[in-house]
Length: 188
Image (cartoon, rainbow, N blue to C red; front, side):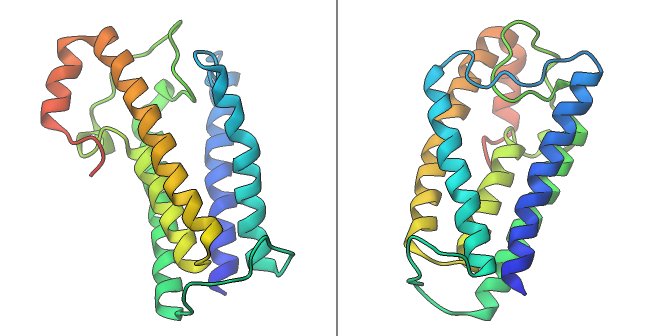
């Protein structure tokens, strides 16, 4: 049961993001800026697709790169489901707080206002916190070395992106962003 719920959380997470991107596109806002500043970003999608396959394979009994598990614990698996859905809540609150300012990637052409209210009053990067929650939650449900590597890689890639965004935001919003950074933590 936990495996099915964990897989569903991935579908719901993707659904939230795709819905928001399509909704913004219909509003005349190009929300997809992925890979515009750094073409190396295009190396990420194959790994993301393999991650999705790994989650669904573990949930539905498809062939896996490794069936080895670090532990078998229903309690930890339920904690993982809870953490995955907490990530979904963070994502939803982020999208609501963002309004029409949501972008995938850095939008140097049409940056919007600096969002500091809602969930952004508690963390400067709630979407990335959401991703962390989902990655760790999925690992607790399917505790194998492949997903452990994804946690490590995800943390490194997400932190790299946060640093890139912070540099842009500091340059674009100046003192307003510096003051915001003093009030609100980077993650939690």
